[in-house]
View: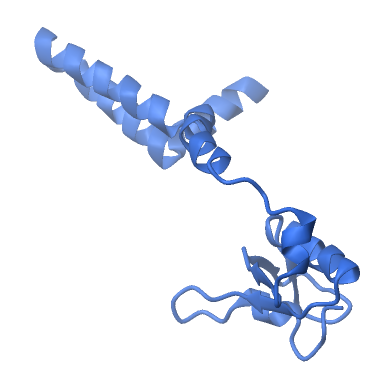
Length: 144
């Protein structure tokens, strides 16, 4: 039952739906075109799975080494780029909490701050005209 649920869920997501429609349409095509559509569907599927994304991202991430602590201590300030917040999650001081990608960034900035007392600049934004949830995390309060 669990496996069936996962298969149905993956078919309803956009990339699974596109691949399923391509394979379904291949049934009604001539043999030569059918082979092309099946190969294209396999190619689209391979590009849409996580391990392939990792293969493309690894060279980009490995091209840059993290800065050493000595280099970080010479900076004028620490800039933390926001990566989202979870809205409508009650917290002690606000109406939103930091997301899964934002929290480690803020924690690292705080740890660096404890080593060398430099200012921390939090940068975040919002999507279209919606209010920024990340701004509510520290609404009127200091994070530290």
